[in-house]
Amino acid sequence: MNDTVFTRRSIRRFKQIPVTDEQIRALLDSALVAPSARNGQILRYCVVSSPDKLQEVFNNTAWAGYVHPKRIPLRDVSSPMLFIVVSAIKTGPEISPHTWADAGAAIENMLLTAVELGLGGCWIGSFNREILEKTITQPEDQTALYVVAFGVPDESPILERIDADGDTRYYLDDRDVLHVPKLTAEAAARYL
Ligand SMILES: Cc1cc2nc3c(=O)[nH]c(=O)nc-3n(C[C@H](O)[C@H](O)[C@H](O)COP(=O)(O)O)c2cc1C
Image 1 (spheres, helix red, strand yellow):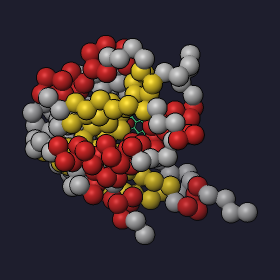
Image 2 (cartoon, rainbow, N blue to C red; image 1 turned 60 degrees about the vertical axis):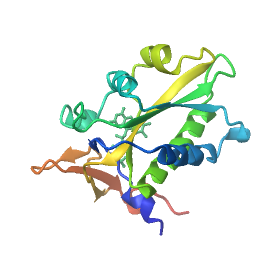
Image 3 (cartoon, rainbow, N blue to C red; image 1 turned 90 degrees about the vertical axis):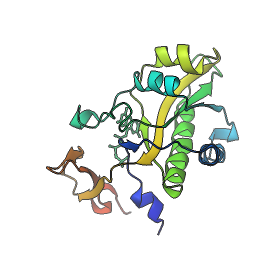
Image 4 (cartoon, rainbow, N blue to C red; image 1 turned 90 degrees about the horizontal axis):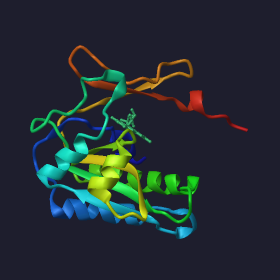
């Protein structure tokens, strides 16, 4: 049983402690050994940790829609200390579905590695691609796919189990703790 898989939760409150160069390197190394279609490895990574660039990326991301605005990190209080923007080299007019799958595999590797490093992360799909490509990732032959936020966790979300008819929306309890419902195998799998 792999505990890391079960303990990983999306983290949206971070201690204001820098992520070290060694930790950044470990995150990248884990992404770079992820599976990729045809072992094509067309993903590229933009590592953002300087204060002004962190703020620029943060300003163009959206957080925790179901509990809006309560899990938007606060500047200099709970904001991420590292963003990694995952981009793909453009190989044709459109990004292939396999490219999105490649990004998912690489990001999950980084999120699990983060847990093992004592960090937490949040996968961000809601971001202003146009602005970030202009100001952050820049190379014209790349498309930004996802942003991933990292830092030392300053919250401990709780995993809940739900049946097939359960509500999948995460929620905050009256102590401001985030609860994250997940389907059971009975609810989600068929056995033939
Ligand atoms: C493709 C994808 C896009 C996501 N985009 C966002 C996002 O824009 N903002 C955010 O706060 N969380 C985002 N998340 C995190 C999900 O909300 C989170 O994974 C989900 O609520 C389950 O919680 P868990 O990660 O703790 O299991 C995204 C996750 C995935 C896989």
